[in-house]
Length: 223
Ligand code: URA
Ligand code: SF4
Image (tube, rainbow, N blue to C red; front, side, top):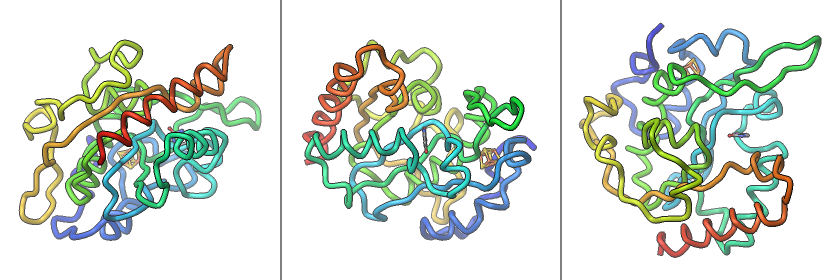
């Protein structure tokens, strides 16, 4: 099943249209073992869109993105950066939970490039409908989805970047068939570390403050 594109209805007019179609996606094999698809959520007029990696264990069970430990940390960082959480939309580069069973435990597995590419039409469709001012790339997986494999979050975090060229060329960055052929509008993009990386850091406070600093750049860029 190569890619999500054929599961996105041509007559999608709204995020709800996309969300209704997403449970039918068999664009890669990850739907087979996950509990459910976890689509983006938030303000349909959001000027800031945050992109994570994939749902975690708790998100997979609840069907909502960023409702586990990483989500709690992200919410705290958003508050500290002075961003109104009601003006956000939060989603993931990959919409099914990828894991490995060890006994009864489900251990997170990073999605492969093939999963990222397969799932990207959903993400691009979300952007096409939201037309955000700023996209926040949370960690390496989202960066691979949007900026390509050569991008290094550690080196380029916290900078306001233009939409990558690739995001504006449907050949490289397949634009899903939204009615009217809407392409991803040019906007700004800021990359930062993933909140899970803050949770894993030796010095959590410093890592957290770094995330907040990057989100302050986002807040300023969205004004
Ligand atoms: N990590 C992510 O990248 N996304 C979620 O939804 C939860 C944890
Ligand atoms: Fe479709 Fe994405 Fe789920 Fe793969 S991970 S089945 S492409 S929604």
